[in-house]
Amino acid sequence: MMINKIEKSVDMNLVEKDLKYIWHPCSQMKDYEELKPIIIDHGKGIYLYDKEGKEYIDIVSSWWCNLLGHCNPKINEYIKNQLDKLEHVIFANFSHEAAIELCEELIKVLPKGLTKFNFADNGSASVECALKMSFQYQYQTGNKKKTKFMCLSEGYHGETIGALSVGGMDLYAKIYKPMLMDAIHVQAPDCYRCSYGKDRKSCEVECFEHLEKAFEKWGEETCAIIVEPLLQGSAGMKIYPASYLRKLRRLCDEYKVLLIADEIATGFGRTGKMFAFDHAKVSPDIMCVSKALTGGYMPMSITITTEKIYNAFYDDYNKGKAFMHSHTYSGNPLGCSAALAVQKILREENILDNAKIKAEYLNSKLNNALLENPHIGEIRHIGLINAMELVTNKETKEGYDPRLRIGYGIYKRALNKGLILRPLGNVLYFNPPLNIKEDEIDKAVSICKEVIEDFLN
Ligand SMILES: *Cc1c(COP(=O)(O)O)cnc(C)c1O
Image (cartoon, rainbow, N blue to C red; front, side, top):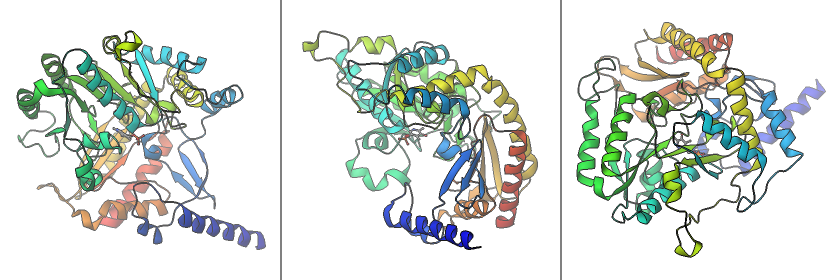
């Protein structure tokens, strides 16, 4: 008894200290008065365990980055081996085996033509890098008028100023508008609430006309367009067809606009193929990867591009054409070793093929459990990602007033039951590690069904 008591007080101590010191990301800290921070002690596979030993299913892959489970033995082994050799080295003029080997591995799985790798330490930094690289490329290849960026409404590309400027979500950007650069925001596809009255089957990508019009008007002054391919994640896991990307590729070629694929959320099997662009069978000019790149272990991103773009920067030093862009932790060896382990596991354990079977299983389970629910407007899915849109009325597809915070309410209940169902407004989603097991899917779906029904019906 005594020991229990002491342990408990240590925990309270941690929570209090957390609230004393830590300003948590993307949070109204006042919410933490009611929902205290959960102090996680350790993780294993799909599970996280708090200090009291309570188990949580990490169905959101800890912000979409955990690809192969927590505390994965192989990734651990790779990082530990690297740790005993070299933790970090300046990446200007120096290099190391893990980075080189990683590039060799990635080239095997990347869309054709992407062969040059520029390293940084988070997704937003990779987006900034892609924007600057595009701008400078156009400048140095005689297209000095091409200075504008194009992007899609409700897109999300990170939180730094450049990334926010090409993002379309007011929730994150509105207050900072006076600080942001002026990008061209084009109406994105909205397949659930299609304004052409089509559904996913009858769709002929009518909404692409918005991009056609935008290119007609601004194509000549645009240096690049950035998109989240197939899946607008933060917007609420909105899914649009691959043909949209194929058309966009053609339009970009016609207007000499660089196509930047932000695959930070979609990369490494999340959409059922290695990259979302693989569904469209075309290549972007620049691709940003992060999140699952290291299996969710280490903060790392890579901005990957073509020989053609790389060559536009390659000249005698005094011509001033170099890409003078750097981050202290570029090419960090621990990150590279984790990423290398991820590539080995994906290949050796045939993860993508197995995930396909799991994806079908998960979607049919969720459909059985919740599709009939009067407040689930749609369960859309791609790969293992499944998103449930909460509506007040299935016919009109009317969403709940955001001020009701319905998603957040369900999230809190699910947490009590041991499921991390962090919402995106009125959208609840599953985005689990690719090696989730069927019994774990069963458990997560059953908790999800129970809390949604309890809360809404
Ligand atoms: C998460 C994310 C980013 C930003 O990455 P950070 O590492 O959080 O800076 C950018 N784009 C997309 C599509 C993302 O999902």
